[in-house]
Image (cartoon, rainbow, N blue to C red; front, side):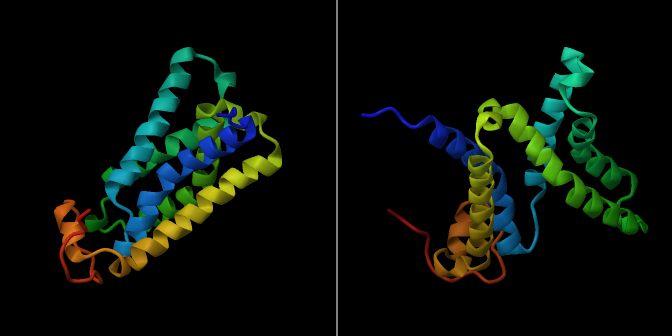
Length: 177
């Protein structure tokens, strides 16, 4: 077997890593009109692990100052949810969460890619954009699969997997091989 092209390896690694993060939140947004808390907490765990790793090596220059801010965003979301629960008359603070997400999420994604996939920085710009493009396409496709889940999944498929049954699923048995 021939050696796998290193450019393909770099693009595929970046795209696969990105899609592993994007697909489930996109699917649940399509199927349930919500992003599940476990996806948010998974992002928090990764960002916090990278933040603590940077703090433990004690090099301020290891990450640009905007990167440190981006790595703290998931913790800020959690603190805001604790300090201003939606049920106690502070819904306006959750708009701040949306703003933080819209501004900080792209920086956080870029930073995590740069830190966790060192070969990504060595790729030419065209290949880096290809990896981002693949990730976005898979995210959109996952959202559409969630939205139109009734075409290929049944309510029983969701039920047997331990997930809640979405509002517009199809009746029928589970998928069997």
